[in-house]
Length: 358
Image: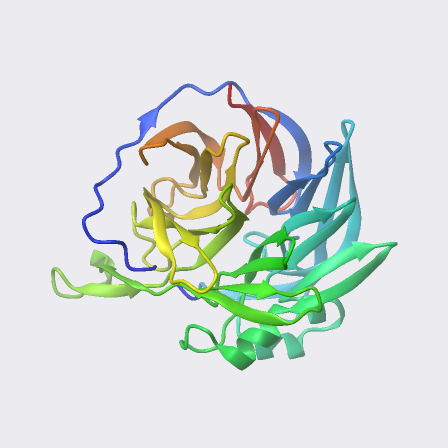
């Protein structure tokens, strides 16, 4: 994965204020690398499961080491206390032990039909080497009537347009639906793209790198700066109609240097909130309050996969809702509660938990 946009000058450091959260309740379990979540109007929950990879083919992964392909990705439906994989056999690329999979990464709903992204995290041309279900990697898909329908080819667009000009790599990681179509955050492409109702893809925004301190283990001279890529992870439409995009940040995954950007089509992205670490998802509640989900509150290089759910106050300061999370992967809000896909990098032991916010 290509790995932050330049932060606006003069922003103050934001110090989080811890609060006690109510105990989490598990609403789904036994999931494979669970990621994005979405509710229907009647309260049915859909979960994107990135899968656990498979027997291969295998090839070098974006973070070092081999990854292997399999058709183990899925979309799970949770309703009235029951869970069921309603879409199966989707592309999944994971480490040989099934961890940290790239597959179904986010889900939205049209009526009761799931619309979802499938990740790739490599050059678009690599898809041509994958068998069967692998040909749907890097796309926006719809499941209806027992069929998986291709809505848009995000990887193909990245291969042709390369919006950030840094070489074509793609990992469609998040989708939000609007009256104008869809917006997709391409984490590896450092871009936000629009999908028109006819499937045409165009660029909404590009997120540039920022310069950060080089970690000591690189052995560079003291004070040396290196570029860290944006890696946009989630996109939602805010109460003002603008798009809001979170960022993971790329290597060396600097602590406190991730932001949430506001994107108005036709304008350059602006920083809406900052001071986060390795953000993977975000959501607005009915009152317009922003919640941010961090996959690694102390930074991905720390080796500590303690995640955090953070409330962003009106003045931009942070309030920690909970850190009782392990490598979380997705967030949705409903009826005064946060639903989080916990252990989002785990095969077989991932779950969705409900956390009361009031």
